[in-house]
Image (cartoon, rainbow, N blue to C red; front, side, top):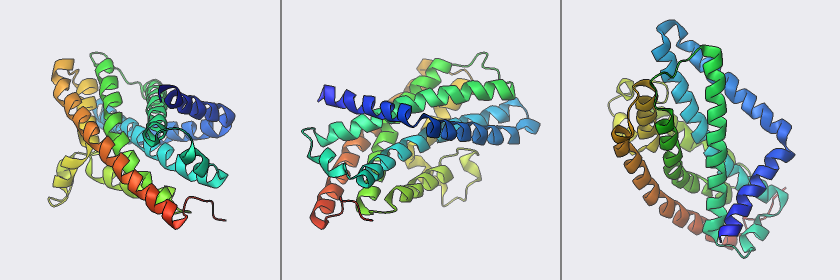
Length: 259
């Protein structure tokens, strides 16, 4: 299982090299998008710029994870290989987690690149910031996002044509309630309780505490443990839901490519 797990990660990175030009387009878009968001806060001081930049980085990481998981299923169906992948002598959990961990590793590298470019263009200073602590929080939060990604990955299984695009529903809800670009307090009172169940809420709080306030590992530990706990719960739940969706798709003949 270990070698097959690593093989999936290697395969996905090989696909990046194969479509390097297309990947460069998306990275460039991500940089420009984050810069536009950062420039909004320039007139309000460096603290506001950092606040917005952190939101853009975390949101980019989360969006990438959802995108990679959903697109993997959609792409394999389009190529006509999804049935072969599901029939391969590999545990389904290894297949899904291999793709998940690839998305996390790639997401961390891309976030680091974005942070460097944003610091250069916006003149950001990280003096006193706990960058390593923020990185640890980001990696651990990937576990909880992984569980959400597994749940979202059922949509391309259920819908043969536009399932991958339907994952934007999950992303939109998380973007709305998690305080990505604004404090949760500005939301209507009836929406605010929903933010409690979003892992992104705690990820953003922890990373902002690490980068803006220089929070120590001891101060970040409650967030890290909480995010790890959410991941430990969500990954099995997501896998169970995906398994049910896969069985339904097999009975209905939905795995094959249509069109």
